[in-house]
Amino acid sequence: MALQILRAQDRTPAPWKNGGGVTSEVAVHPEGAGTDDFVWRVSVADVAQAGPFSVFEGVDRIIAVVDGAGMALAVDGAPQVLDTPYEPFAFSGDSDTTCELLGGPIVDFNVMVRRSEASAQIRIVRDRAEVRPEAGTRALAVVLEGAATLGRESVRLGRLDAVLFDAGDADDIAVDGVLALITIADRAAV
Image (cartoon, rainbow, N blue to C red; front, side):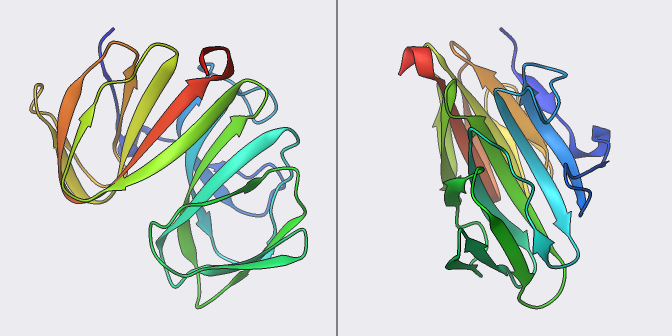
């Protein structure tokens, strides 16, 4: 299958599930799924004010700050400060989670997987990555800062552009900045 290039400029921002902010979907499976029926979803969100996170029952989440000073979360009452850019933090979408901003608006990066159907891992890459998803997995590479170039295709990716790899796809990515490489595995394949 051919790699799918997902350009940031082609995304349409949409309100959060709880209406408290705006998100731009990078990729979702199955294609066209909404917030109640996705198996996995990757997005970038603009967070302009403090408040509660949307609850996603049965969903595991990973979040990282991309721009801004960061945020202090309370996840089921337990404090967690996210003030280091690009450092992933995993938590349950079932949790009662609230957010306080540490110094004004931020942009964050979100990975959500329905835990009964998939799992996800994030690796932050700052130089070069070889991407070759195994059977039952997909990989999504998202440029969080700077740019990246796909080796075989010589396709240039700008900030917040992404490329989706299915099992059997393969390429090298040269990173001039910061790239999030997400591996998503079907539970049936785990």
